[in-house]
Length: 262
Image (cartoon, rainbow, N blue to C red; front, side, top):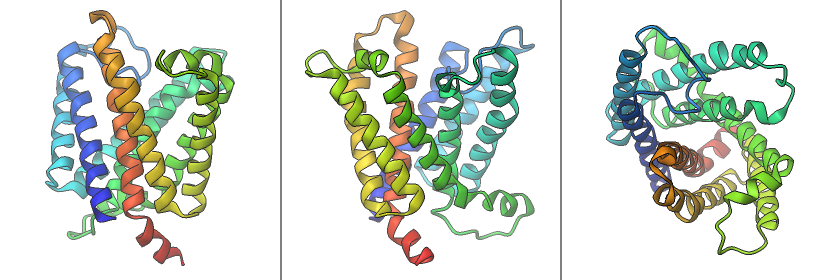
C-alpha cells in the first residue's frame, strides 16, 4: 500500500509543477487557482513568481525534498486563497452564490489544498517549529474535506448531467448513464473516505477511476483542443491527475488511518 502513496504523491507533485509551468508560460493563473481578476498591479511579475514557486513545490513533493514542510506551506497558501479570496469573491461578485455550480472552482482549489495536507501527513514531524506545528494540526482535516469536495463533485454530476454529458468521449454510448454512474461513484467514495469505511479500497477505486478519466478523457481533449483552449484543457488534466494522486495517497495510508482510529 505504501507504493500507492508514492505513486499518488508523484502524480500530485507533477500536477502542481505542471500548473506552475502553465502559469509561467501563459502569464496568467490557472482558472481555478484564483477567481476572475483584472487590473492587479504587477500581475505579470506575480504570475511568474507564483508559477516558479508552484514548480519548486511540485518538484520538492516528487523528489521528497522537505516534503512535509513544503506540503504544509502549499496547503496553507491554497487554503488562505480559498478562505480570503474565493469565498468573499463568491458572495460579493454575484447574486448567484446560492447556486451550487458557482462554487465549482472554489471547491477545486480547496481539494488541492486538502491534498497537500494529506501528503504532509505521510511524513513525521522531525524538527519542532511553531509554524509547522500549527499547520500540522490541519493535517487530519485534509482527508475529511477532500472527501467533502469529492461529494460535491458527485452532486455536480446530477445537477448538471446534460452539460457534463458533452465531456464523455463520442465513442462511448449512453453518455447520461455514465455521468450518473460517475456521480454515484464520487458520492460513494467521498462518503466512505469521510466515514472511514474501507478507506483504502474506496480511495484506490476513486484514484483508478479518475486516472481512467485522465487517459480517456482529458489527454484526448488536450490533443484535440485548439491553441486558444489548450491551456485550459491542460490545466483540467493536471487537476484530475492531482485528485487521482490524492486519492491514491489516502488509499496507501488507509490501513494506518484505520489502526489509529480503531
